[in-house]
Amino acid sequence: MKNKLKLFLPGENTRMIIIAACIGLMSGVAIIVFREAVDLVHEQIFVRLYELLKIEEGGWHAMLLPLLPMIGMILLIPLSLAFPGKVNGYSFPNFLRRVNLENGVIHGRNIFIKIVSTALTIGTGNSAGVEGPIAVIGGCLGSLVGQKTRVSGKRMKVYIAAGCAGGIAGIFNAPLAGLFFAAEIVLLGTYEISSFSALVIASALSTVVSRAWFGEIPAFPIPNYHMVNPFVEMPLYALMALLVGLLAVLHIRFFYYTRDMFKKLPMHPQLKPIFGALLVGCMGIAFPQVMGDGYEYIEKALAGHTIATVMLALIFLKSIATAITLGSGGAGGVFAPALFIGAVCGGAFGSVVHYLLPEYTASAGAYATIGIGAFLAASTHAPMTAIFLLFEMTGNYVIIIPVMLVSILSTITA
Image 1: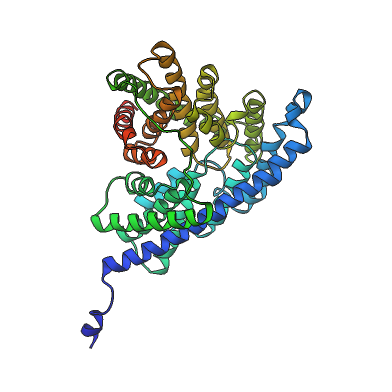
Image 2: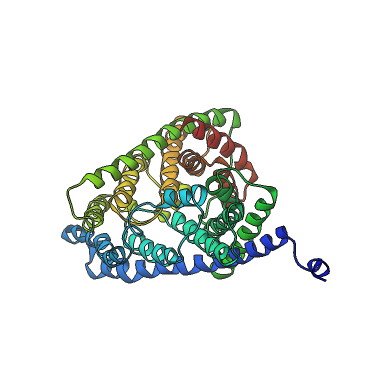
């Protein structure tokens, strides 16, 4: 009788696909809650205080800008006291270690912690990204489902990776990018065909939920990409990839150097994020572009509405601001800062080559677009993620060849 009943029950792989679909749907809902929380904090604290303090008028009012990110870090103190060691700093490497080297069991409270801490950090103007935290939130959902269904080992990793894939796919409106993010970064390139199917389902359904709420809007409105003269521009893209790869190495090393410096700083741990917010706020007085996730300025760089000298300065200032925010104890990720730095790297490079060779090169915005792929690939060592993210954001097949070139070359350089 039992053998006959088993014929009507779903097989192991089918069960995994069904569960992955549920994880994808939950990840999509989590993205909605997360993004709305960040926007709520930004509107109710940053925007309101910005208007109340009349910072836009300049003069001495502008000197009050550092108060806004500092308030976010002050509000973070109760949460960090309630959950010591779980709130402050860049935690994605710890998440990967738990997934790949430990049993993958992650407490559900991390979802609440990530939403609140990241919203308070980024929503008040500190420099960090939302993508790392949303990947962790999706991974936590996958882990919770794995714990409830009493799985372990490889199957637990697949559920966590499915949640991460859903998180990245939904936040960028890019299911293929989410798929390869989970495969390259979370699973470290080791997966089976059945696992790949689970990631596909989770990415697709999370994107469906996200699009249903936010609309079918790309992460960045990128102008139509084109190459003017491939024989001239492809070598230039290769040169840019090498330069961007070296900058990615400097960015990563400075990030960890800053984190170590803050650890050694003779200051109470709860005061370090506030001090870091003060420094970022002071930078924001002269260069407000470094504050927050930087998405608005990325759009300007991609549209070519920027100045080369400003972009050149922002390459280093955004790196410094991000290192200070996360190194001092702020919460967030490094994905959005990588997109920002890549855009200004490419934009600055493109401005120079277009000035020198206007008849043979595209606009600076085209180089900013390719620069995103180069820096993202170099800083994460995930070239496939960078390639498909750019492809999905532009919807232009022409971009594939230069993005493949710069992603591979910059990754090798880094």
